[in-house]
Image 1 (cartoon, rainbow, N blue to C red):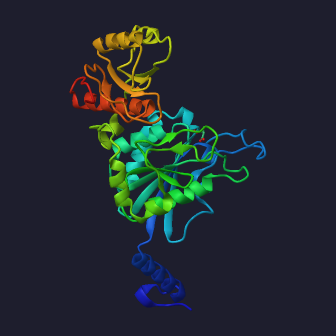
Image 2: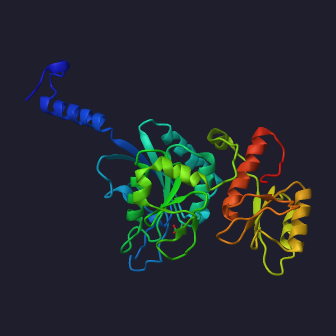
Image 3: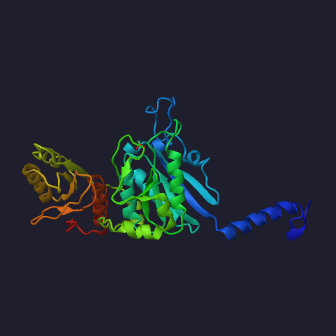
Length: 354
Ligand code: SIN
C-alpha cells in the first residue's frame, strides 16, 4: 500500500505508522540512554586458548562486543572505546581522554548514566580520579572482571549487566564501583584479592538490588566517606599538558630514607611524596628526616597507611599532610590533581589536610 499523506507519495503507510508509533512509544516510555565507555582490561581480555585461562591479553575485545547479548530491554545503549589497554599501563593521557568523553556524554540530557569498563589492577585509581573530577551528579559506574571474555564462565557479563542496571536506575549517585554483586564507594573501593572473582572491597558495600532502589540516598551515604576536595574542574583538567611528578615511598623495617634522598637529588625531582606509612601512617626517623628535607625543597608530603582498613589520625606536631582515609594509591592521584589545581590557580604550594 502506498500512502499520500504529508506529501510522502511513495512512502508506505504501514512503515510510516510503525515509525510514528515507535517514536511515540519511546517518548511515553522515556527510554533511558546509558553509555558504555571501554578502556580495556581483563573484562575485554581474549585468551588464544580458552582452556588456558591465565594466558590472555587484556583489552582485546571492543566494548560494543562486550555489551552485545546482554542489552536489557527498554535501555538504549551507546558504546565507545576510549582505550583498549591493560590497566597496569593506565596513564594521564588515557585519563584525560576518558574524562573528556565522560563530560561529553554526561552533558547529553537523554543520557542517564555512564558505565566505564576497566582493568581491575588500577581501577581504584581511576575511580578516585573520576570521583574528584565528577564529585556528584549523574551516575558513573566503573566495573571490570577477573576472567577474560572468552574463557569458561566469565564474570564480565554479570558485572556489566549489574553496572548497566545501576547506571540506568533513577537518581544520581556520582561515581560508584560495581563488582561481584556489590556497589562500592569510589573513595574506599580497593582491590584486595589478586585471584578471587569478588576481588574488591570497600568500607560500606551495598548489594546491587538495594542500590538501584535509591541512588540519591546511596550518593548521600557514600559522601560520608571523606575525600580530599580538589579545586580543579573537568575543563581545566582537559587543558593540562604537564603532570606533576608524585612518588610513593613505603615505611618498613630498616627504612633509612635513602631512596627519597637519592630521588630528590635528581633532575625533575618530585613535586610531592605520598608515604605509605606503618600503622597510623608512622615512619622511621630516617624516612621522616629525608621527607622533611624534601619538604624544605618544596615537595608536598602526605601521610597515609599501608594498612587496608582504619584511618590515619592526626598527631600533635604533624609536619606532613593527611588525606585519610584514602589509601596511598588514591592519595597519589589526588595529590597530582591538587598540585595541578594549585598550578592552574597560581596559588603556590600549600599543606593539605588538617
Ligand atoms: C588489567 O588491569 O587490565 C588486567 C587485570 C584485570 O583486569 O583484572
